[in-house]
Amino acid sequence: MGWRTPPKCDVLKHDALNSKASIEIESASMNERRIHIDWDRLKLQLKEAALTLPNFFKNPVQGMRSLPDWQWSEILILQAIFVISCSTLANLLQRDLLGLITGIFISPLTALVFSTVGTAFFFYLFKFASHRDLSFRLIYMHLLFASIPLMVVTVIAHLLPPAMIIGAIASAALLYIGFVANFKLPEKHVRNVIAALLAIYTVYWLLVLINNTRSHKSMRLRATPESLDILERELKSN
Image 1 (cartoon, helix red, strand yellow):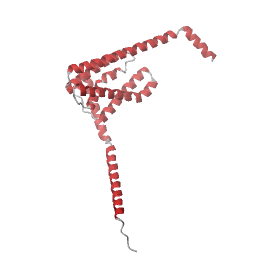
Image 2: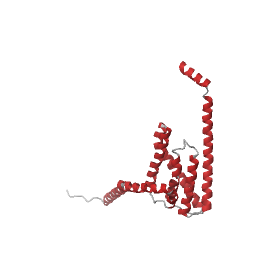
Image 3: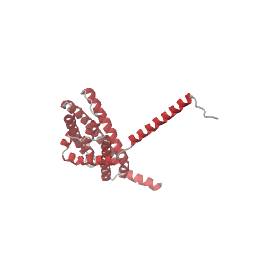
């Protein structure tokens, strides 16, 4: 019995299946190349990026005028490390074990959310008010470096609450310098926006401080000798 030539439709179907499989293999290989991360290069980039921080601390004003060109991987990793470090120091000074544990996870997420919201605010503000299409990444960089004084003072905020206002003023000044120097934005417009945000933050901080002071005062008033005796008797009876 001789070989039977397959119908033309079967040949076309077979070729189509082979072509589809080839496309899927090529797509998979492309995805693998995209997912692949050069860890050695990333470590080198992070090391070089970290070396710029001491120069910034020496002269923050000049540092805001000449910010490094970090990529997202460097920005997010170094931000997380810095925020976790500040949170850990603050909770160690307060002897807050729960805050020490939860701060490792919550503090970088909180910083990421606030930085993203703040960046989006300025991005669309400059887009519609100043008709400037600025880089989202560069705006994020400005907020990150400008927020360093505020993050640093959080370490001692429980000992000296007004330090938060001092840190906020310093951060606002650095943000103003960076926006004007690097983006060439109108000084008056930037100054008014940042001053308004600083005023809102100050009012919020005062309200929180007043509320905390009232709560502590109320707790002290409740802790009278009579109330302590009643509590002690209840504990003994139980």
